[in-house]
Image (cartoon, rainbow, N blue to C red; front, side, top):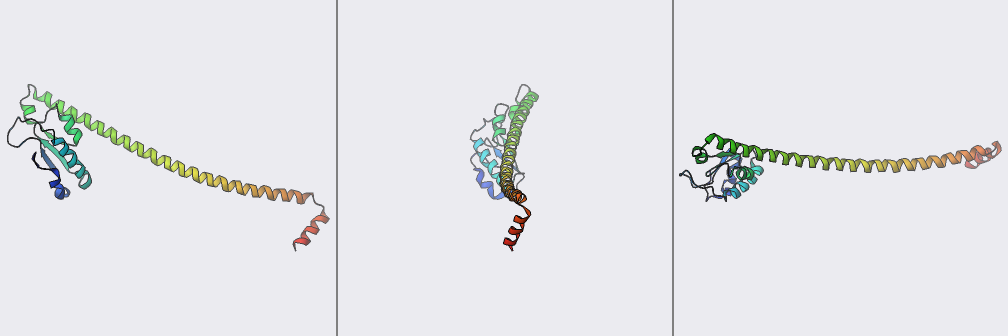
Length: 178
């Protein structure tokens, strides 16, 4: 757990052994405090470290969380939220939970679509590279076949010329080659 004054980098040496990090977005101990927006930068930095060191580690945030800021919080990389006062002090606690859950689902769907688009672009890049390599290979094959074809045409011309020769002329040519 890190408090508002604690930088996330202090956790780096332990992240490889950590299952969850709790980011406090208010000073612990008093309910009903306002969310500290600079906590989002901490979450982003922490998320970058986690992705590099231990992608299975989850980030939880506690303090001032409500449906009003849930999208920003989830968008920064938080996996789990604690929403105490926002739920228990709401006119309709269930509706508040549903709104927070909806924000989570929308952000998650957006992230899934982004990952899918990145995967699609990578597949396209790979296919284009493979296509270019095949075209180079095909060009080389066509050049080789063209050269072989030119040699065959030349040989055929010589054979046609030889066919026009009389038997006596052929004997002279054979004697010359010996």
